[in-house]
Image (tube, rainbow, N blue to C red; front, side):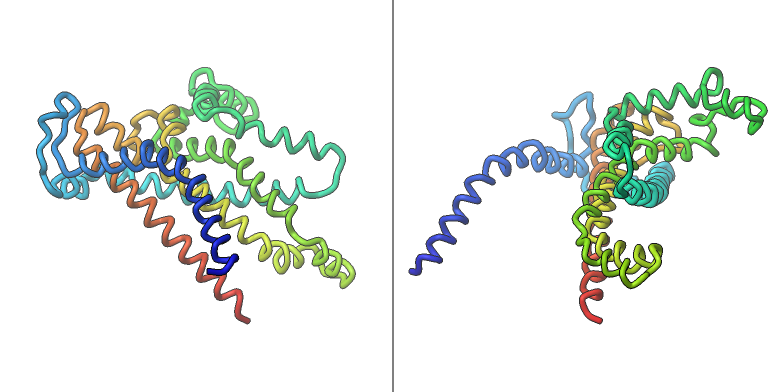
Length: 300
């Protein structure tokens, strides 16, 4: 056996030894609860008497797929995800490009931009709930003062504005996260490309589309997949702002309502399982399309 082979096997054993504690923790805090949730989704378990749970097969899933409230929560979740992540990506990219420029006070500006992200979601959501209140909210006061509206609007209670209020709050809070990830990607780009473009007199807009964006694409894909996973399981911001409002109910809030309010563990677990499968399918499709795009870009 060669020395190189022994060294490789030794490194592999060391790697598994370091990974083992993390895998055990993951099995305890993630795999076991997930397996229990999937099991309960096939039972009629009730929170009042879990020991009396009986196996009911796919009955929970069959009823769930015929429930209009479930499909409304699916639509709300997908709409929220697509709109909020799109806005956060566009705004985050613009902010990252601005912060990447050399200008006085850039360090202070970078710190200030991160403040919304540093505030806990519960705190920021409650703060916006007060600001958007139709009676004493400062948002209505400002809009009335400048003549945009005549009277206060119940932004988080009106079905026509509630989902947009939630999206606005999420964009305000999470755009700094996107900007931070994209700024890190921008700072890793090679400067030689920009120096060559400057010597050739290429317009900055053309440099962005033909140099910056293609080189930034790996970091952009990572940032988007992080936000997609987070947005698809949105719970706290919507629950604080609008509670169980049907107009904004996400899949997570629907599952919580079944599990806690109605104490139907079997049905709520079925909703949670479908949410997990939705996120898994969404992630797999996204990564597959991104991989196909990268493969296509490798060949002229």
